[in-house]
Length: 66
Image (tube, rainbow, N blue to C red; front, side, top):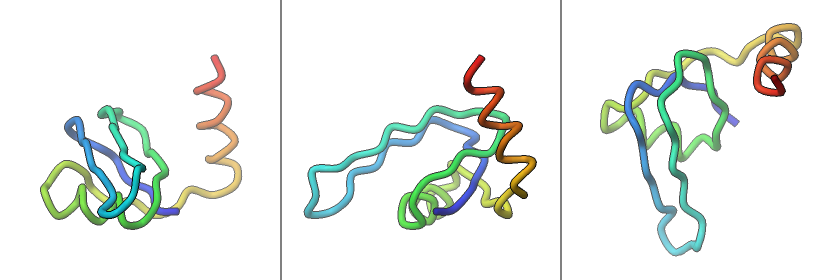
């Protein structure tokens, strides 16, 4: 899984698959499969970020739960 910050709404369908992604922009990092992140970066909708540390992941998860 890769991490990125999305600047704009991004919709992507996997070729030859019934799976699609509709990603809304957020100021915080979001985690999606590598092929989705690569497609978003290619069209300028996202900027890749390094994977957060375990402590940072727990903080992000706690924020989403509220």
